[in-house]
Image (tube, rainbow, N blue to C red; front, top):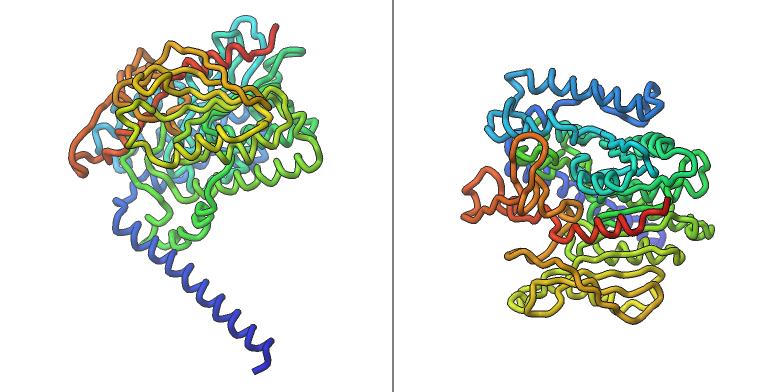
Length: 487
């Protein structure tokens, strides 16, 4: 057999094996999700017609967007909560009429876009939440800016704040279009000569970074002066690309559960517990697009005009690696007062032998890095035998560490922060370890300490054990206040 035909034959065999492997992955995922996921409910299936999409020609402004949002929540009530056949029988269900989570979800403003308006604004700020979250996740940061005299616009991203099914057919470009509408509105609220700032958590941080890169060349986009990013989804594992294929059989009624990575009771008023595969697919596509445009802007020498960036990141993060933020974003930016604030694990001596290797190696890579073009501030234990923490600061391009004492300490039993915890203070009414007063009925999810055997609760124990607040949020508050432009 001629070499060319032999090569073609083996290539076809290889392609056949790859196709068979993909088919097995899809079929295996479909069978597994059908066997392990509970039966889907109305909030996993319902399509809300009044949700925003980028191709809606009737929505031309942020005011239009909010009017559409009002209709969206009216549709949610009429098609789900007013239908006895569709509501949740779970007493703590977000879609159980009259439950505490339902009251918080619908009777407070935090699942919708909202605005805080001071009497005489010093400027304006746009805040954008993360994937499966709601505007509530930026409540404390919004209050920080508002207390400093800023007009604050907090955006609800399409597909969020209503039902998990809202993420089944959303596209990252829908999110980006909504960010653009909100940015133009917020910048106009600042007024002539006053600063326009922006901040985001996780997916919201990635969207605002992409927006800022595009605003370097697109003069129709108001450019923020500063970016404040918490747990920014700058880079995700390529394993996330599998989300493009694993749900391929979800169009079949028998395998409809395969459209979902998780199906969990919806007891959280401000965050979805169930997670559709499409949501992972869209954040993966967004981060890839961001990486491409960052590289392109860097190649053209435009990144020197990026807004000043402050990033707040936990060294332990199940979603985003700190090294990706450093190498894939901050290290690309020319020096301009950028800063990375890293929250370390609790290194009190009794825990030393229990700390996983990954955060140790991640922190060491940051420590070993030389001539970084941004300041690094590490929030870590003052001494091995102490729960008190200090700020260890290394200036951009520097080698020496400056130690600044803080009047903060690790709460008993807390070993690390994490991806979801960064923007919530310890006294957050819902997610705080020591919850303070808030709007609506009392619902202290973050302070609920659950220990027991797996399967004892309808909610997985590991979800309740995950820290949902930041005992060092005062660091974020102080960094924001000290960095604001002078009047």
